[in-house]
Length: 253
Image (cartoon, helix red, strand yellow):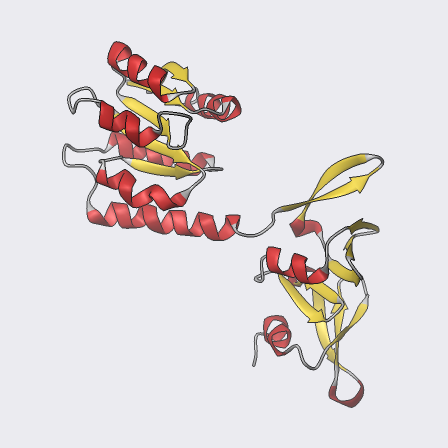
């Protein structure tokens, strides 16, 4: 049985992790806290086998907690943080794994598997490289907007970026079009273009961005131009200067 202690200064993060760990038959959570000083006290008193440890906390951070423990007191450590720049140092202090928030249930499961398979000398180089590659993939996904706040009926709704079919420029505003609805946001098309994943969103004109998942086809048009036909039947002009857009739309240069 893995006797586990959770240390994170965000109560919601502790609650979410606790919920996941309760589903593991060989894991029992013996305690939780939100600061490094209390963590040191609990580790020495409870002697947990596993420590889920946040890195950035007020006064005493995760690394300081580990450095304050004697080697004989230190449990297996899985760092949990929203920042990937500490990854190499985490492995230098012999962390078993390193979870980037927000992490999936599958990613947590892999971390627990690493703990279960741990040997005295820690993980082998190939396992560490696998973890670093996973963190780079997560960071690439987190770099772009996943949801955009929009006003709806006096409330703020988080609109999933994947539901946006196209975006039209309106001066210092932009219109997000999804199905039969549209939303105006106080942000320029240029600004939104930088924040959206270019693997899905492509600027086809100075005033239009389209979601590739909603594009039906590209048709030849007047004087060597092209039209982008959306799945809802809308026809949008493709600027002849948007060469990268043509490549993204057709897969050809």
